[in-house]
Structure formats: C-alpha cells, structure tokens
Length: 283
Image (tube, rainbow, N blue to C red; front, side, top):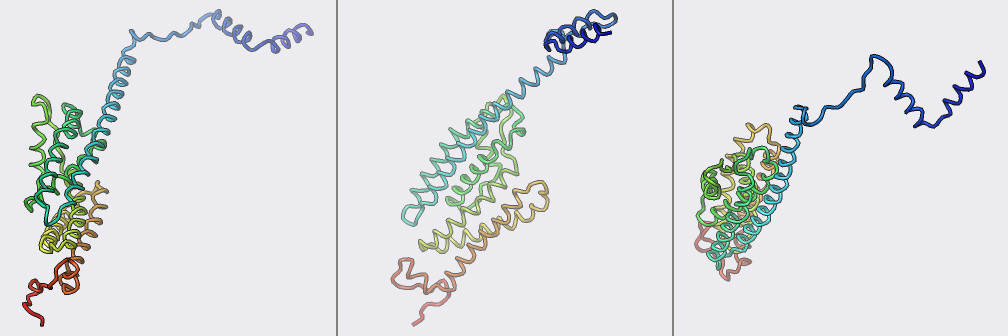
C-alpha cells in the first residue's frame, strides 16, 4: 500500500512534459484508437476552395486601396477646378472659364482615366463606396463649369458619354450611377451659393439672380425625389443643406433689390442706378 502511494506521488511530481509524453504513449498503445491525421492540401478540395476565396479577397482589398487613392486624386484636382471658377470676375470671366475647362479636361484625362482603368472589367458597384466621393466632386466641378459657360445643367448622359473614350471597348465601361450624380448635384448648389454672393459683391446682380433661379429649380426637383430614396441618408442631409443655400441666395438678392440705394454705391458705382426697381429718377 505504501509503495503504490509513493509511486503515485512520485508520478504527480514528475515534470509536466514527461507526464504528457507518458499519456501520449499510453493513448497510442491502447487498442481501438488511432491517431487523427490532417489531410494534405493536395487532397482537400475544401482547402483549395478557401485558398481561392482568400486570394480573391486579397486581390479585391488591394484594388480597393488603389481605387481609394485614385478617387482621392480626383477629389483634390476637381476642387482645384472649382477654386479656379471662383476666381471669375466681370473683367476676366472668359479667361478664367477657359482655364477651368482646360483643368477639367486634364482631370478627366489623367485622374479619372486612372480610376476608370482600375474599375474597368470588374463589378465596380462592389467598390462604389471607395470611389463615390471622387465621382461626386468630379460631377460638381463639371456641372459648375457647364453652368458658368452656358447657363445650363450638364446631365448624366453627357458625363457618361465623356467617360466612354477612357474605357477599353472590350470591357464593361464605368458609368456614373444616378445616386452619385444627384449627390454631386446637391454639392453644386453650395458652390453656386458662394458664386452668387461673390457676383453680388462684384455688381453682377442679374447673374446672381440667374443663379438663384437655377438653384431653386434644382432644389424643387430633388425634393420630389428625396422621399423615394429611403436608403440614402446622405441625400436627405444634403437636401437640408441645399435649402440653406437657397435661402442665403434669396436673402442676398432680396436685400440688394430692396436696399439698392445702399448697395449700389458700395459696389463701385458713383451714380446709383435705380432702373431695376422700375424708377428712372428719385430726385
């Protein structure tokens, strides 16, 4: 009895690796139990499938990173086009708009073309969140240039037609979807609000009022679409910001119309002009 107890106590005091080794030998020698073996990669179809999925996801993540960088470049250079348009005045309007159009063409040929190249031939809708900010900024710059040049709105078909030459005809072309176009159009109203305030300070009251009517029309049309876009929280937020832009333009134009005798001399005119009020002489 004592010898058995001493042997068990000595066994419990043995180093842990030795006990594990002894247990493993006992398990291998016991009848009816065989050690489990892992199937090799060559003989496992499931592992082959998961390896294929892993390679696909890694490639998709790498593409997403490249698309994000390309979209960031489009955003930065599109903002430069917008800043160029805001340098416009009565004396240099044609010159500024001509340079803005050249800058926009450079953005299309260099940075948007790179984005199109990354997305061509793939399910680009999977990466929409990666490139959507750049596309919205590009739409904003293109529509702003179009309005300042012709006074009209650049529609979605015209923008997509300009992107077709950038794509290889053998692959599916990148087409800007309606949501990104409308989001970019919503941002356009903010830039037009800044442009209208600048035109008022430069004495171009008629152009400011033209901007006011244009922005009001965009807001009215988009408010009809917003209730049907339940999944776009971003659009609903921009609708609220758009209303603020409309109100600011209307208040600025209204103030000039009502208090014209105070504003006109401050705009650089020595003799007040009251013709827009329907009065020829106030003496």
